[in-house]
Structure formats: C-alpha cells, structure tokens
Image (tube, helix red, strand yellow):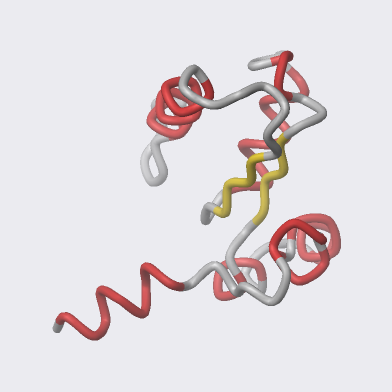
Length: 99
C-alpha cells in the first residue's frame, strides 16, 4: 500500500467513512482507476465484510483498456449491471472542461 502511484489506503479510508453513513440495504458501487485491485484486496483480507454482497468495484473505461484482458472482462463498467451505460469518466470530463 505504500508503493508509488495510486495510494490504496485512501480508497479504503473513504469507503469506510462512506459506508458508516449509509443504510445497510443499499447497494453501492465504486469506479476507480485501480478498482480491480481494490476489489481483490477487499476479498482477500475480508475488509468491510458487512458490505461484501452489497458493493461493486469497477474500472473506468479509459483505464480498463490499460489493464489485463481478464480485468476488462470482470471490472469494465459496461459489463456490470449497476453502472448502466456510465463510462466512469465524468470527473475526467469535468476537469478537462475547466482547463
């Protein structure tokens, strides 16, 4: 978690803080550049077990194509029902327009 690049502990802290304020029956989703790694760590270390059946992780479309083929199959937002037709790049478009 302390390697260069994406700092995964920020994601876990944000998810933990968010989940504490949501009803347990809700279904939540998180699109992130390294959503595949986050999902695997949540399962491997059994983090946030109370939300394991109520959460989905995905990788935004732009970043999904830079990942392995299996990652694209499992974590592409248009392959997961919760995301609908979202591409996960809304923030990228917003920041691009601000330039």
